[in-house]
Amino acid sequence: MTGPAGSDGVRWTDNHCHLHFRDADAASVTHAIATARDVGVERFVTVGCDVEDSRAAIAVAAAHDGVFATAGVHPHEAQHGIDGLEDLLADPNVVAVGECGLDYHYDHSPRDAQREVFAAQIALAEAHGLALVIHARSAWDDTFDVLAAEGVPARTVFHCFTGGAEEARRCLDLGAHLSISGIVTFKTAQDIRDAVAICPPDRLLVETDTPYLAPVPHRGEPNRPALVPLVGEAVAAVQGRTAAEVAASSWDAATALYRLPNANQL
Image (tube, rainbow, N blue to C red; front, top):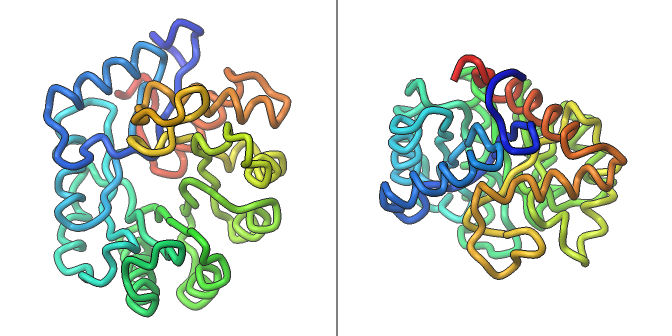
């Protein structure tokens, strides 16, 4: 990696955030990106959760260098279907389908609708040659069952991974990546740290999931991409690596997963 970076000389990708959350105004989005760049966060993937939200993600990506979008329907919104989603996938700013998957913790949509919409988005990712971003919460067995039935796109990531070592092995055996959020810093999150310990560096990404899940010592605050180095530092501590090494390997993993331009191409 060459060119300007953060004060510590490293460069990060926040591979999952919601910069456009609830139609955030342009000034707040610009500020979030600028403050993140000050600490070396150079690339951002802002993630769609329904069709309209995905359009907002694409608009933010179009307006800012180094920002990319996904288009998808979150399991919470599965009951509304995916009409119009495929129309967004040809946009050059879209690098993945999702986030999609299953969430049996909240069950905001019926489980049969969640499974149907998840399966449909797997098919879209395959058809359009895009990465797949999976949300899986309290639904591991059904998540793996849907993937077994539909197939696993070659470029797949489990975002905000919340399983333990067993679930991590199953994801890795499928060829998927794990994306680690600020939860890794929580005192109660030993299962996630156990998963991080066994994840190969080239299959591990870091994210903020902005505005959710701010890492320690910022719990309770709105999250922001500028905090992704704290996630990387926690990963580094678990894996016995330096933060710079995690920054470099997670940058390369995000580049490959989403087919992002590298630093000198931004």
